[in-house]
Amino acid sequence: MHIIKKYFPDLSAEQFEKLGMLKSIYDEWNSKINVISRKDMDYFYLRHVLHSLSVLKCVSFREGTRILDVGTGGGFPGIPLAICNPGVDFYLIDSVGKKIRVVNEVATGIGIQNVRTEKIRAEELAGEFDFIVSRAVKPLPEFTSWVRNIISGRIINTMPNGILYLKGGEFSNELTGIDNRFKPYRIHNLYEKIPEEFFRTKKLVHLCIDV
Image 1 (cartoon, rainbow, N blue to C red):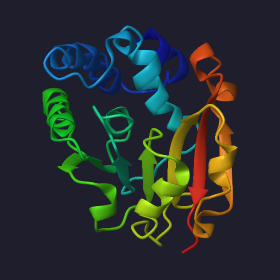
Image 2 (image 1 turned 120 degrees about the vertical axis):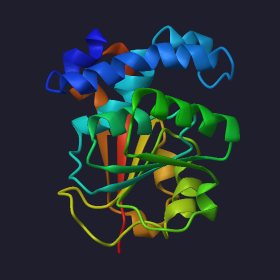
Image 3 (image 1 turned 180 degrees about the vertical axis):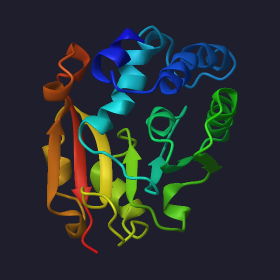
Image 4 (image 1 turned 90 degrees about the vertical axis):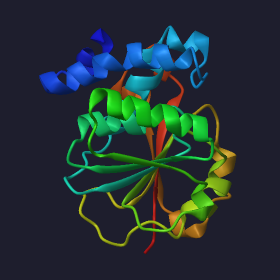
């Protein structure tokens, strides 16, 4: 937890408490349903919680913002973001039912009130969301094709609505193939904001939607 306090010192005592509860809950559930690799559990707060919260180094969400987390897996980035943004509505989806079960148990276990979940594929989803967040579940051209029709035209944040995609490595070839509705885009270098070795190649890609 010290690494979370290092980069997010202004979180409330309640938020720190809830974030601090995550590791033991995931340890318990990971022994039953393997949603996080055993190796990654040794670096849980760096590779999962801080990586999820790195989004907040690039954008502040206003109360009432609607966020969809696609391919949430065990609840990342949605669960840590929901803890730190109690006035924002989070909808976490995954096509694997056992992963959604874990997310539900985690949310209930630490009392997160602003999360709802569903076992569903993104391309089957209806509704409107201000932002779509995800941790590189698919190449960008395929991902944008899934969500291009469910991003809201209402603007309540200073950052334009669209996709906030956590990526690593080299992906410039993916950007050439994205839907034209998602241009222009901006790439945030997370290592500049969180200078830990894990973040050296990590980026947040913001794909704006032309509505």
